[in-house]
Amino acid sequence: MHTEQAISTVRDWIQDHERVAVLTGAGISAESGVPTFRGPEGLWRQYRAEDLATPEAFARDPELVWEWYDWRRSIVAETKPNPGHLALAEMERLVNNFTLITQNVDGLHDVAGSAHPLKLHGDIWEMRCTRCSNQLVNREVPLNPLPPMCDCGSMLRPNIVWFGESLPPLVLDQAWAAAEHAELFLVIGTSALVHPAASLPLVAQRSGAKVVEVNLEPTAITDQVDVSLMGPSGEILPQLLA
Ligand code: BV8
Ligand code: ZN
Image: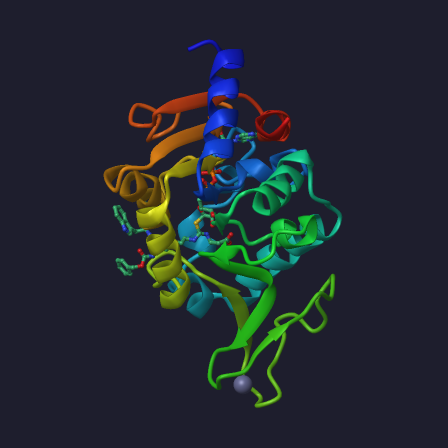
């Protein structure tokens, strides 16, 4: 299908369906200036994920892991939502039953006005204690002291889901249910490699949803989706509402 025609088809689907779910990845924030993970300038090219985004890495060298998150926080602090984030906040107002699911930890969907994004991998502005149940929001950039400490005397950690860790069960349940009940499922700016998030579009499709992908390039699931829209999400998403 020609891109113009595909866009108009998806625009009609959004208007004609009651239950729409959306999964976003790092690509939606790329145009805001947040680095993605796996692209040519992705974060994993300069840093090995297993050195930084695992519980083992944090146990081995918490200072190093915290420095990496402090650096990423300083980047995110300078960014703002782009037209892609804003289009999804608008879509939420237009669709009867709308669920936004994100793998991103940057908080830009909140800033754009999305009401309750389901954050599968946590939030870079939150931290939690490694010993007690303390969990807090902290927007200080740069962090001082680094690593930050809990009032109980133990170290805090980023409230982020690292490789090998379980996703927050309630959030994952809600995301799974939204995928199963969706009539239309949009997958935006994700390489669809990290599970269980990457399973959600396929769960939706198996349950009868039409699946639409928006990405700059083909991904792990492009062969399986119903419509693939190739282009920057900040340009394509606003067109889906026009
Ligand atoms: C778990 C830290 C239970 C947060 C992140 C099944 C099969 C194989 C392996 C597994 C499996 N199930 C579980 C696993 C293991 C593992 C996994 O999936 N490994 C993969 C890599 C093989 N999963 C886990 O460990 C998960 N936990 O399953 O728990 C369990 C427990 C123990 C043992 C077994 C099971 C936890 C996963 C959470 C990992 N946390 N990072 C942080 O610091 O930010 S993942 C990391 O990748 C980020 O969080 C990110 O959210 C996530 C996904 O990446 P994307 O968002 O897709 O970003 P990426 O750069 O890859 O792609 C960007 C895309 O955007 C590209 O396609 C690009 O073309 C596009 N793009 C760019 N610009 C634009 C654009 N598109 C449109 N417009 C643009 N302008
Ligand atoms: Zn504590």
